[in-house]
Image (tube, rainbow, N blue to C red; front, side):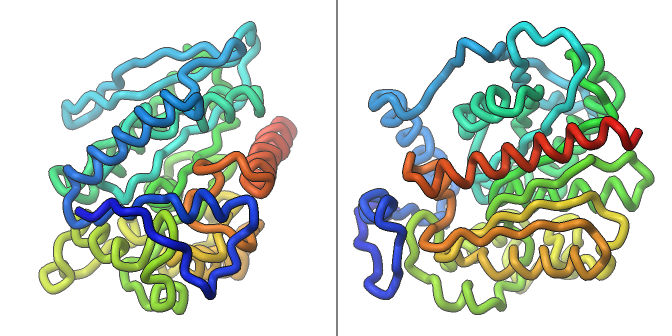
Amino acid sequence: MSTEPRPVPAPLRIDPHLVRTAALYRRVDHADPLAVRREAARRITIARMTGLWFGSDPGVEVRDRLLPSDDGIEVPVRVYRPVGESEPGPAVLYLHGGAFISGDLDFEHPRCLEMCRETGFTVVAVDYRLAPEHPFPAGLDDCLTAYRWLRAEGSSIGVDAGRIAVAGSSAGGALTAALCLRARDTGLEPPGLQLLLYPVTDDRLRTRSVREFADTPAWDSRNCVHMWDHYLGPAERRGPVSPYAAPARATDLRGLPPAYVMTAEYDPLRDEGDEYARRLAEAGVPTELHRFAGTFHAFDTLASAPVSRRACREHYEVLRDRMNATTGEK
């Protein structure tokens, strides 16, 4: 696995505040999942040492717990609760990114702390099983276990079961969209909002952005191929792909929860995210799409640039507006 720093390709007009981060970002070849996980752990260690990874917040209480599932698997979750909150309130089920092959409860811990603090909502992060050891649908099953638990027993942690959003970044965006599809198709009460941050949606890799962005910061089209091979198996042996694995394959998007979709200009996933948002809107789903210019994959977590902070503020505001609005809809 090569992890050498690489320069930003000249044609990319990266936001000036993101240029240094983009230039220093180490390439990670996702052909080797174990190497990817080691690199992710190394980055968290460095972020801790430099003060960029915050393990606690005085306004947030954090507790880990295990949720039993129907198949006997215990699903680890981390519950973030505003300190001093006594009334039942909204919750966000958060599904981390990591190309389906990496990530754990620490992976996006700072984001979940901030999301809890800034929204005032309970946040529940899911440590779902990872490919290739546990290919589709294991990770999605774990996320559904956590969602059903929130619906049935959320009141035990101060959650209003009628006001639950599901959010996810990258591969977590695919799991978020898939969870909404499964909920609709099985008669499970749907979330009040699906928040899709530069989501993975399509295994077919046919978009212009996939073709063009073979060497972009943070994520590139070569790693898209590895990601799907780990999650679904090699393309030549895959067979029919379920829309619960690749949501873009769903032929009917009617009846899904309102959506906020965020994409980045220099991300191979850009066009599939944009297209999924367009199809949701055409199906009558209230949908907001924001493509952030001059940005790349995961830009909102890799730097404290103004555009990164603006993106975070925006999706926190979307969560607050939608979840608070549902009070009068029950």
